[in-house]
Length: 133
Image 1 (cartoon, rainbow, N blue to C red):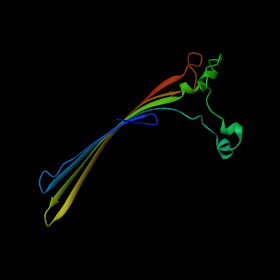
Image 2: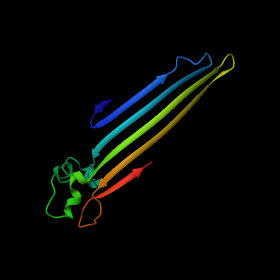
Image 3: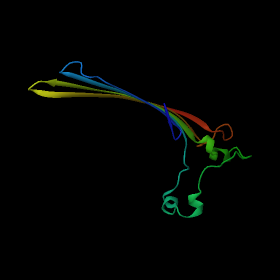
Image 4: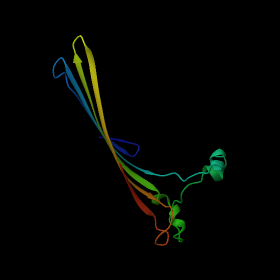
């Protein structure tokens, strides 16, 4: 397992040395888990003038405040956790002196848990969300 920039990544591959001279099978599995904090949205005007300090440093609050409605802008309430899984198989079938057939099948899934400080309930507490594909 590798740890790259806040991500856990596992990739496994299995290549057959040839079931026979006709069929060749390759199997791949990928697992990726990551957590990230979101960037605060910029308007087109802010992005177009990003070199101004008030736009360049436009981000979420580093600490909670005494105002619950302002706490939706706390950076730790604006984050996500993502788990991705991919499985791929490549099956090559060679028919001598005729043709070659290659079958590729991919299955993908993503589980995501998002927290966004958008809207209010319970006096400004953040809203957890789930996104499942």
